[in-house]
Length: 175
Image 1 (spheres, rainbow, N blue to C red):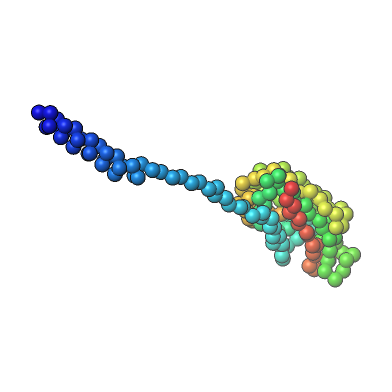
Image 2 (image 1 turned 180 degrees about the vertical axis):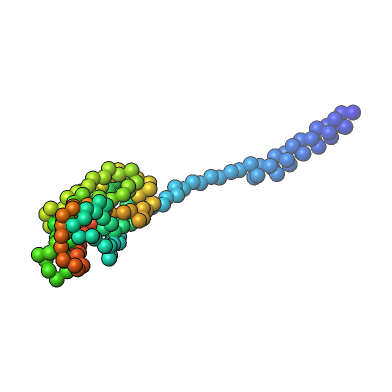
């Protein structure tokens, strides 16, 4: 009986030691980690698409005269500003005759994301006027297109037939 018990203990011990040797290497584990990074590039882009050939009725008031449209995109974390300047100081001048002109006022744009907007009178040539300012705005970061740019033409401006033009320069600045 002693021999049978000893043999059972010996077999059980052998199985236990064998199982631990087999399980030992499988129980080992190693870990490693690393930081994954990505970079978002700065985006600051603007395109002004001027209106051409829009008819003006001599002497008539024209509220919201179409000047063109803007496409813009800016993803600056601190926000952005949009300025405008007029080559002719807020005047549509007859091509070939700078004495014939149509004055316009209240240049403004449609909504651009959640920005604060203003209308401006461009009484001084080549002077930047603030049209919009904004903190970071996801809509503008994604890009906004087809934003209407308009101005008001006052009544009583009788001018000869012809083409009248001004050059507008829009500046989008990342803050």
